[in-house]
Image (cartoon, rainbow, N blue to C red; front, side, top):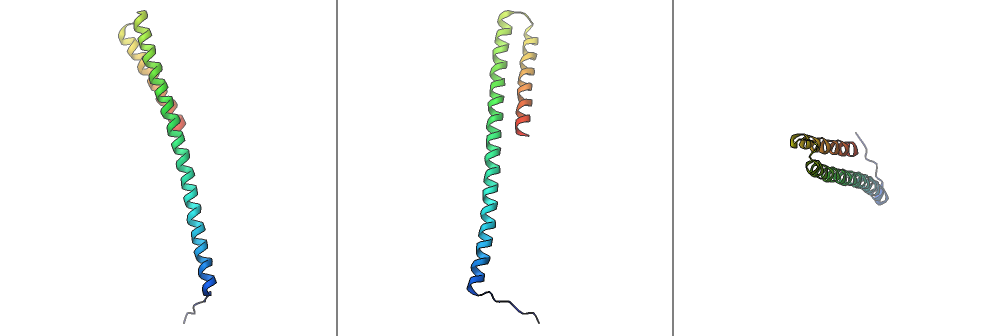
Amino acid sequence: MSQRVSYGSCGYWLRTSRVAAAVSLLFVTGTAFATDQAQQRQQGRAVNQAAKHEARSAKIDCRAENQQSNAQCRQDKRQTKQDGRQAKREIKY
């Protein structure tokens, strides 16, 4: 036969407080991780937007100066945007 150990009312509160402490620790850790992720996402978005703006300006300047064909200006714009995407990936991951 197995016997049950009785902790009384003090044991109940001890177990309850341990469970509450564990749950709150998990909650705080999860919140901190989510905050870090949000900051990384915002930084990545800012880098990506800056790259888009830079690519747009570079294409306009390229077309205005008539130094290259429109196709080459377009390729330069694509490469600039791709570089921005890569910078965003480096921030996020």
